Amino acid sequence: MKIPFQLFFLSGMLASCLTPAAIAQHASQPVANTPEVMQALSVLPPEPRVRLTLENLPQLRSSAINIDLAKSGKSRLQAGQYEWTVRAANNRRTDQNGDRFNEQELAIERPVRWFGKAGKDLAIGEKGVLLAHATHADNWHEASRSLMKDWFDTLRETASIRRLNEQLTVAEQLRGIAEKRVKAGDAAQLELLQADTETRRVSVLLQQAQLREEQMHQMLETNYPGLPLPQLEQLPLPSLSVESAAFWQDKIMDDNHELELAQAEADLFTLQAARIASEQMPDPTIGLRAGRERNGQERLIGISISMPLPGGARLAETSSAHLKARMAAERVTQARLKVSSAAQRVITDSKRSHAIWQTMQQMQQQSQTQASKMMSAYKLGEATLSDTLATRRQALDASLAAESAQIDALQALARLQLDAHLIWSID
Image 1 (tube, one colour):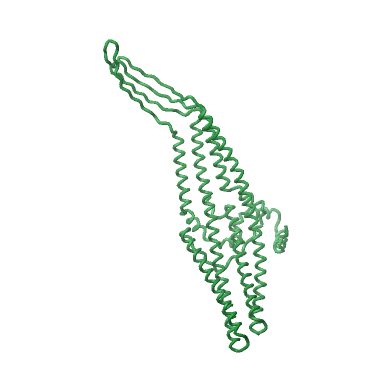
Image 2: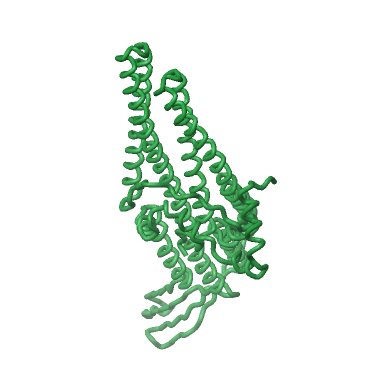
């Protein structure tokens, strides 16, 4: 991989100034704490406002309620589904002699969980709560990603409006110069028409960008109430982290809500499969009976035990539960591959977008220099208006592309920090 000259020069300075111990200490520090990264992340809205906005999103409020629901389910599993049953009977007995007797019977019975089933139910309830927390954390992270994307999309429109305003000012200056030259007889009427057309063209582009920005503002205000709108005075410079790709890969993989969610689901299915398998040994129903026979001449007290005989349905249900657990385990592997691939893409985007921005910035500076020289030449009558307008269009395209690349680099850095849980983390 080719290293840009700036990075090569910077790495040489670092190598000459830092000892190996100092380098190791710097690498272990959170990247979000470096001044360069903090300055680059200043383009984001304040984190307290972001957290408050995320907490009030309907999907996150719903997943927070789901945690309470899981806790309720845990209490239900801990208590068990069995209840006490009371039986009462009143009989009339008539013997062969014609004597009649009143007899009463009272029984209370309840199925009981045995062979560790109560412990298994408690473990399933606890895992359900962990799963609900993992789901809430994953929803939080996905909502953070969406908010960040919408924020930078709005920022792009705001930045393009600023550039188009600058270009419109230049186009109006060219039109004024062309008008003076036409009145003085130094230029044909066609030049004034060309300058006027260019002014109108840039004005239309500006109106379209303003419309898109207004739509984005409406979207932000609707989807993220309470979040401040982007205020763009000057874009901060993107920062390039000195940590290796392996560092970021481990950082993202070690604490990833999507992986935690998939693993929690697999663990829950495994526990449920073990619980269903234990049902092949049915639970007994134990009861206590008391009765009066022959008008109380005889009194009975006893216990009863009943147990269902297992059939093929229990075995089939156990087989299905184990298959679901295996499928959940495969989803963990699939999620790990997905997260690893996404992490590699985010890391690559962060590094490549920074290099692209540097290249585009150089192109912008060259285009602006050419446009300024062409502007001066047109004022002196040494260049045609067509060439001047073409140069201005190239300069505008270069400026828009450079600023878009700068925003891309800032977004890639922010996304890397977000996926590494260094900003906006629910934890």
